[in-house]
Length: 259
Image (cartoon, rainbow, N blue to C red):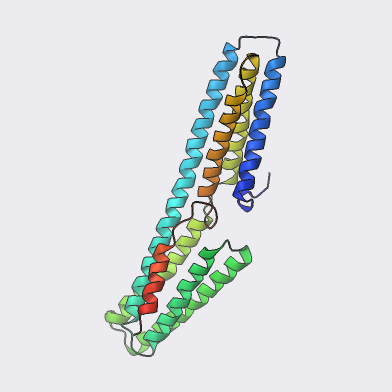
């Protein structure tokens, strides 16, 4: 299966998950109703084991998604801090390098705000990265020009050190954004979930008088948990986005720097 789950809207993911889970549960119920052997103590044991495996798989996948969400948040904060520190030290550079560098840093920060404002396409993301790289090169060339006339550790050396950190932090953040939960793990979660509700439905079908409402509620709960995992796994879209406040604070600070 090569379908990119990240390309599907979250409401559609929830609907599709719910449809497959309920169909699996109802199919299990129908097979259980047609079974000739009643009782089902063995089926109950198997069902409990598969549900336990599903719980383990959900916990494992949720942990992976949450770790990646935290990594994106930490990478954003680290990059925002590096940009802010670079801007502060850029103000120590001689004219006209100070104002030119601050202008480039404002553009650099704005690129990040523009990307966070909406879900960018791959082409837009690539263009933004290329523009960021161009700004990094311009900033480094200006730093080299300053160093050629004044190679003192303060302020030129400190500025170049933090500029280097800022450049490295871009790659750290891009790596964190691209580090999704592997698709095979998501598909394995779906397969185990459908099998679990199917066996649960089968056990329900063995009891002819048992209501199907609980199995439908179970399917809804599982679909909601999978939706939460998918939401955490998305870097720029969804209901649980990484707060861009650190970048916003840096942008506001840069706008206040006049010299």
